[in-house]
Length: 78
Image (cartoon, rainbow, N blue to C red; front, side):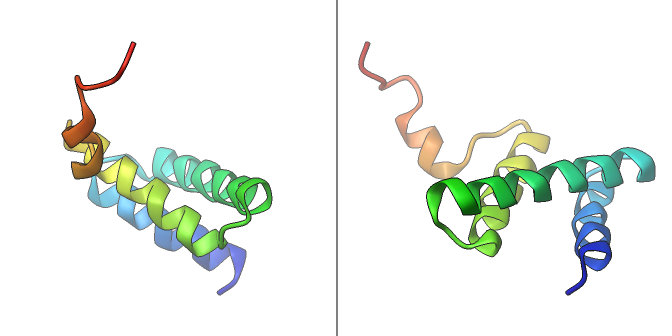
């Protein structure tokens, strides 16, 4: 998949969540850039990093935490 196609696909997700097209494109570029950073820093695949980041974004757009984070919310040691 080309970089342009990748950005378009991710921006569609943000558009479906209610973002305007210009903002959706900007967010897609930023998310892909972060996935690439995580790929280098953490040694995970770009696809896996992008999937995790998109999951957080989708739950966040719904005003929720990921189920794994919800289970730990309020139970942090401090």
